[in-house]
Amino acid sequence: MLCIGALWLAALSCTKKDRQVPKTPEVGVEIARDVELIFSDSGRVQVVLQAPMVVRRQGNNPVVEMTRGIKATFYDQNGRINSHLTAREAYRFPRKRLMQARGNVVVTNSEGEYALYRTIAVGRTKRTHQQRCLRTDCSPR
Image (tube, rainbow, N blue to C red):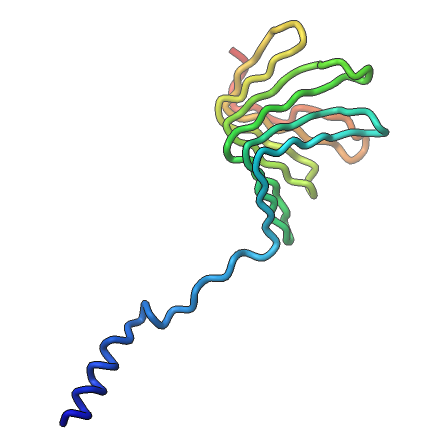
């Protein structure tokens, strides 16, 4: 009888929660803090992007997530600052050649003029490789 009671207590103490295997970290994920990314073409800096945290996820649909805010500085062909962009978060989709900024997006040009957006998406076309604005959720105010 004592043996049966001990077995019963042992079975009760092993709950489903205790039997769960701890989750392993995601494979193909890189996290970096206080990041400065420099995008250039033929040795000329085009964009300098700063973010407090960047998460890069690999896989079939790779994405670079900047969910704690971004600041981007754009340069012209002569290396002079052309414009600035700030946003609460941004996502870069390398395979689609697309970048999307969301949340209080402010775009300022070199003359100090600015436009406010909720969301803005910028990409490169495959034929011309020219940057063009794809979509905005609201017109500049």
